[in-house]
Image (cartoon, rainbow over all chains, first blue to last red; front, side):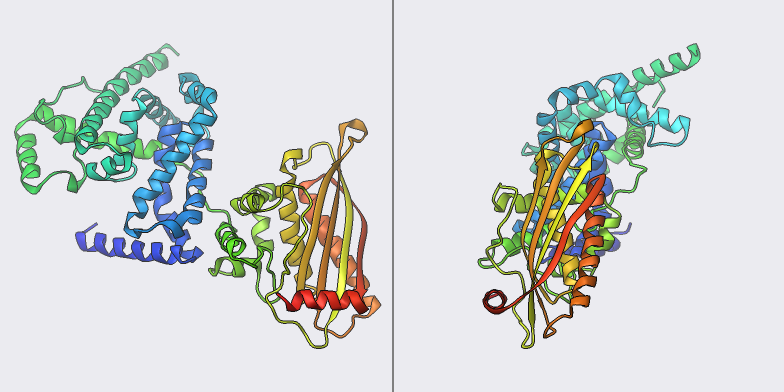
Amino acid sequence: MSPSQDDSLRSLLMEEVELAKAGDSEAFTQLFEHYHTGIYGYIAGLVNNVEDAQDLTQKTFLKAWEKLPDLRDTSKFKPWLYTIARNLVYDHRRQKKKIFWESWERISGLDILVSEFSHEEEIAEAQLVRLVLVEVPVRYRSCLLLQVEGGFSQHEIAELLGISKASVSTYLSIARARFRQAYRRLASEQDTTVKRR
Amino acid sequence: MRNPMVVPCSDWEEKLTATHPDDLLPAEREALNRHVVSCPVCATVLTEYQEMDALIRHSLTTKHPLMLPNDFAIGRKMKVETERPGNHPMNLERGSSLHEQCSEGRPQELTQSRENQNPFEAALSPRSIHIKSTRSTQSSHRRSSPASGGDTYVNSSHYSVRIYAQCLSQYTEVLSDELLGAEVLVEVQMGQVLLNLFELVIIEDVNLRFLPAAPMKQKRCSIQVNARCQSSFHALEPQVLERMELTVEDAISGILLELFGVVIVDEVSINSLTGREAGKNDTQFKSA
């Protein structure tokens, strides 16, 4: 996307936010269409369960719709939306602490995406990535997901998480290093399992 | 990313994670690019980061389309209406659907939206939750404020509507602690049904109660709905009222069947209000 296209999209989205704030549900539906993929990815990477991720994604937008009139700076809609998502994930973790930690276990993690992908290789790859993400501590993973799924700059991530930009940079570096390590290890384990079969 | 892992240069390690255009100043970006061109290890790491991003995005994509509930917009408007003094969330008036009144957005018939939604999910949507928080926690609700937009009709006639039904189910959709949500669902849908028959409607009372358990562990509950309505016609013929009763009976059966297994509608009565009662009704509508 060229910078001018980017600008026009941004101003279009700003307009939609203003309309939605004033009560235009169609404008809010447009915002949902634009942002839900990223929000879902961010949440899914944190909760590691498809159903919970879908549920929390919907809750994020419902809460956003409800609270939108209170949003003073509409240019901050996107980080505000991700903040809602993050808070809902934290609440979800608090409420389902036992289940949450169980869900990090590999076996349940392997089951998670079976229904989501059609091809075996795709399933295996998606499961692998999920497992790899699980091995990245939440603090680092959150930064990584905001960067990859949310498309935020390091400065924006810092504002969103209430930490310094330097910390974000360090966390991202650690997250990516952990991901690379875990990916290699788990991929080789997966290959070995397949060969044994 | 399955090749042996390489470690990037420590000086550039963090800069390599700066994937957003705004993360680095132009001079920093230029320096990074120059380094990557001259350092095959960092170039490999950068490629892996790009691969990593693509893998994450692909793996965290849901194949099931996500959608907002059709009636999502109702929640906020109801909140606004409820918080405005003298207003009530059930301000229904003929000629505009609940959705139109509530969202000011795309008109969508509530009945259509319900078809695509689990009725109980709808009942537990933020709209209902909000109402729960602003209403009495008892399972019956006395409506203190009138429910029409304001106009009354010169040659109008007034009616009371009373519905009593019993439901029986072993696997009911409604749990005992979710009665309020179910009541709100019944209330909203009955409001719509009555607005197809009358000009102005006040849903006075929706009372949903679980009764002592029936044999075979079946759940029994009773539903009572009381409403007051105003018609723009001078008086409705008894045959017309009878047809209206049948329409209401069909409608309430349909609504309750979505929530319960077996529905027995014991009573649907639409009675004409006369004299003092009619006057009282008229005053209520006029004061709206």
